[in-house]
Length: 487
Image (cartoon, rainbow, N blue to C red; front, side, top):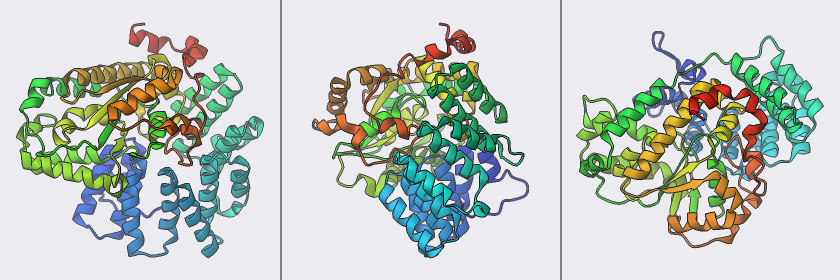
């Protein structure tokens, strides 16, 4: 939907990095381009697009606002902004922009697609289908249209019709690998809802088979070993710290599909808590550190060259990223999935920040990762059960390490206990955050905020326990993961 910057012939393009799942490198390249050309329209849009791929919708919105100021009324920007606002949970603004665009550009396919996706994320399935059918067949992107229609029909429990829509994407010779995988993952969801668990697993396996990306667990192991070597409690106490405490930040640290979206939705009901989603700010701070200190040491050893003024500048970067979102709020949550690798660094740049170490049963977590489209979003390790189990163990080991070594002790929270003992665990959570009890947190499913997550249709329901021990439905397929976990 957005324009793309021209790429140098020799270096990998930003688009190719995204297609290979290398979202961090894509973001770094896009940010470097923007630093060189801070008012370049295409460079601003490129950063916005990559931020959306990284699920940092707050940062994306800032760049979309800048782009729209440079090109008022631009339909491509307005279409992208509508979808991004939806991801920020601002469904009314999103649909207002989409409808305005529809009025001024009646032949443009994007407004109707945006309206449809707003309806989908608000669980208004009939309205979504109506909007999709109103898109001119000649103007449709058949991959996008088919996936959204199939997703809607699965959510509406119209499984036979969903299969037809999804198969049209899967069987098309022009479908991209990512779109084909998305369709297979939705077919997996459809078959699970019909209790065809072997069929669901086969659909998930087919999705992973069409994605060319694979990754080993060795990179994760090397990163964690390096962090543990230089970020123990004694080392952390000796590094330069920012001169002021930053107690507003709350980091939700967990494996994908461990309950981070549920936790964020619960906290969204509290008047003193803002939700920033998956910010890329910490990753950008980490990247800026070596340039700021002119260090020759690799990450994470370069932190040894950081001085107090550097830590202060990095803290200011984070505060700017949170921006107006945190105005008047005591706490702002950040649930970036890379946080588990950054907690020691953040402990010295944002001293006083709180963190929640969220855990979920290993096999339930692995099944959920494998059967949803995380692999389409850059999590290539989810495509192989052995690798996925090894990464789960490595990340859990690092979470346990932070529990023992961070100066501000984290809160440990288990998904299973949260869904079984909602009120007591919510009280414990709010007490840790230092905010008063708010009974509306128990009614998180009534929020008019749309969750920016692949779990949006789940967190808009009342608390349920049916996902606990879900792995037993797929036990016959989980041998490689069970072996890798040593169970």
